[in-house]
Length: 229
Image (tube, rainbow, N blue to C red; front, side, top):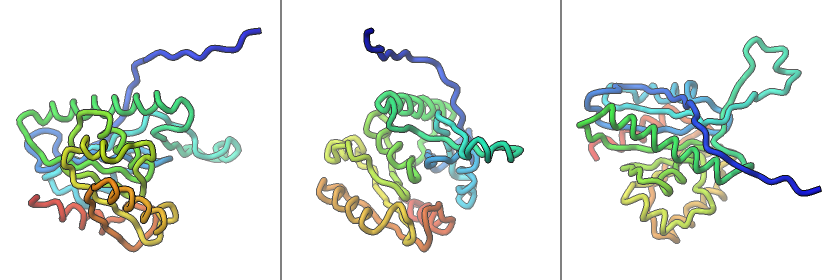
């Protein structure tokens, strides 16, 4: 008996995203914010309410892969079982990355079309698993950001950082981490900083008191630091 052969085809998907702020007109800033593993965009974007001042359009795309978070016995006890989303897993990895890069490119083009005539400052933020997502997006597409924020996550190990730095085309990099984050420990942060320094990439580092979360105070401080640039 012969071995099974793997095949693939491209299909259309319907993607969901959420926004805060003016979707038309001339916002001062345009933020693309990518959630972490197990989150949904509709909940994730609520964390950005403190910086929704009418001058920013904040766009939160949702990963294409959703799943039930709890086990079947636990779900049977719940009226509304908890659902999360993930950008990718190790299974069919390259295709997953290709798909979400293309998805984010299409979304960004659509948003830009809605803002025709405007030239907002572009901020791309990834949280946790979303940091790898936005890093790959900027590496593999023509999308250009003015600010790249990597919050509680790391740059994917497969990226060649000097080449990636060229693709960033001058985007300023900010690492944000809580001092009690169990997933971005001081050792992990030091290794990330060393990678960037070795590649000759400048970065800013912002600490806050807290864990693996999007802290409101840290977010407001971050947004304020971009004002006027």
